[in-house]
Amino acid sequence: MVFGILSSIAIPQFKPATNKAKQKEASLIVSSMIKAAKSNYALVAGLPGDMGQLSKFARFQKCISNNVETEGSSVCKSATPVPVEKNDVLFYSPSGNYKIEMRRVATVDDVQIYQVKANPNGGTFATDGSAVVGCYNPLNGISLVKEYSSKASEKGTKSYITCGDYSRTEPIPNPPIPNPPIPEPPDPRIPEPPIPEPPEPPIPDPLPKTESVESVTQPRTNTNVSTSISPPGINLSDQETKVDPAPKEGPLPSTNKRIKNRNQVIDPERASNERGSDQPTRLDPIPEPEAEPAPVPPWIK
Image 1: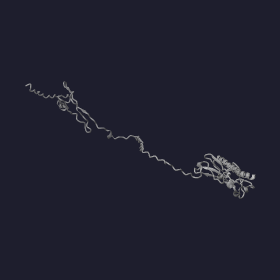
Image 2 (image 1 turned 90 degrees about the vertical axis):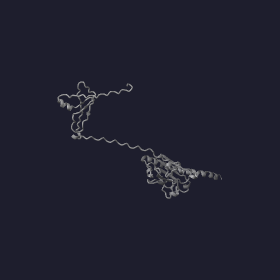
Image 3 (image 1 turned 60 degrees about the vertical axis):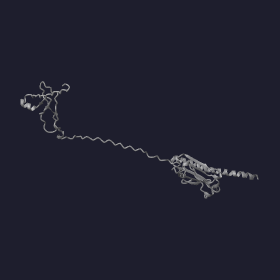
């Protein structure tokens, strides 16, 4: 009876401890692969696509026994582990308890990440064991290694995980916009007209054009001013001088002009004929008209 009580207490505690011990193998493999992927990215600026690129930084072994995918550890106990091959992307752990898978995938943001998962394998352990998963995102530098617990909800096969919310391999739907932005109205201002460029100044002719004689010749002008010789005792300050404009065309006008005065009229041609061309012209006084007597006012009479 005592042994039955002890066994009922110890057996439930023994299974989680056994599961945790087996999980350590998977945790060591996954963490080593993540570290090797980081080293490969630092060396060649790229993520590994197979186990051949990871083998440069760490040694990995696998179980190649028959029926290892179904029997698990029961067929790998007596088998000798062998190194993984260069083109391997899936292999079984040396104990046969875990199935290791890796991949390099691009996200919806065109970011490449490296993912690894180790799920329990073989017999009842495939459903009672706890998985280990990991990932590495070189863009933000995040690397994760997650060990699932022995709870009933976390036992069994698990999928890949992502490093960061924006690195999901599935497209993220855009959330609805509660208040869509209102486009701004166009500018009502009238654009200013372009300023025209000033015209280029004309280039002068190196050789000036010769003008004709007719265009250079100007019409002859003649201003004929008739003056008279004032005899002694006669004041000619009140005389008016008549200036005849020069004709535009034709011969010069005659110099015979008549000078008008209040008191006299001089005819140079008549005076020259009477006295000779060498004698001065005589000025004949013109008698002034007699003034009429002023009327006598009626009151004087």
